[in-house]
Picture 1: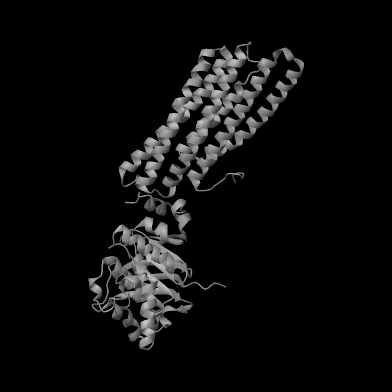
Picture 2: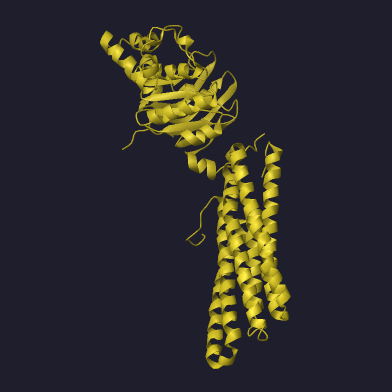
Length: 250
Length: 221
């Protein structure tokens, strides 16, 4: 039987008195790309951040309901282990102010993974995986901040892959990139799909339509509709989804 | 349905609807004129129908272009996507109905050269015109119930076709002197039946547009 990568049941999240996620129930299938769309403030990034407990440090956050990652309750998981299993890529490329090699090796060192040669091997494998190895193999000691925006974002994805996660969370990973760089990152996501479960939050509906197999639409903290991306974009079941994806919302 | 945030998209969709309605009304008029020309033995009117086909063809090309432009410019989704992509298919059906009206007008000329119509096709023709009108209205107004009515009407036209063809063939055996009117009349019955089939196609596409449910090659539930 297939085990879902992430399952939420009746998930509620409050920022103080503000009810940011309202009874969200969803199952994210493994080795697929799932997109979450919705207008600003709908809770999509908040939901994404629940999956690797990035909301834990925000004062006043309260969560109810059940969330499991790879079949284990989220709160039972050691947080370092969780973040090794669930990698995250952010909106703006945020490489560490270190050289290219160290950006990827850093996570492995923190988690005490591998000896020197294993680290080197992983750096090469991850850079190859994101299509950077050929360009950067002779510049590994160069500062990561000198790379282009697209290269920085690829590097951040490579960094997330270095700890061998099973799930990759991507929060608007292309919104700071031009259309060509966006196309390259989308192609990379398709290449990674066979090995990782990818959840992407995006404002770009065409991007969600292009890259994802499953899609959820959120509005005012609720998951209004979740299903196959093709179904959702051609014949959504809920009128609110229809209005949003047709540009009729607001 | 809510308006689009971008009102230009609303206007473009509305313009597309108007063009489809215009094409539909031209084709309906061609069919109606065929029957008028047959009843009044008016070969000039029949000739006019044949010549009017180029306007229908031009509308097909122009609607195609409008649809492609909307797809390219707006990357539509949901109902908009269904409407525009089905619009691309519907104009092909309408253009073929126009061609069948041209064929009908030619057979009308064949008949009236030799006398009156050998059969009254008013009921069948009225049915076909109604199916055409209803299917296009159903498409443009996203009215699935009206489209389902068209599908039911197709059975009536099929029955009438069978009835008239049988009658005309029986008469052909008995009245060999009237073959030059009976055979073209049989062709007209067949053309009307095919027009009804195209209306059925349009109705099925209208149901998909309205509900996102493909009923082609199956009976609607």
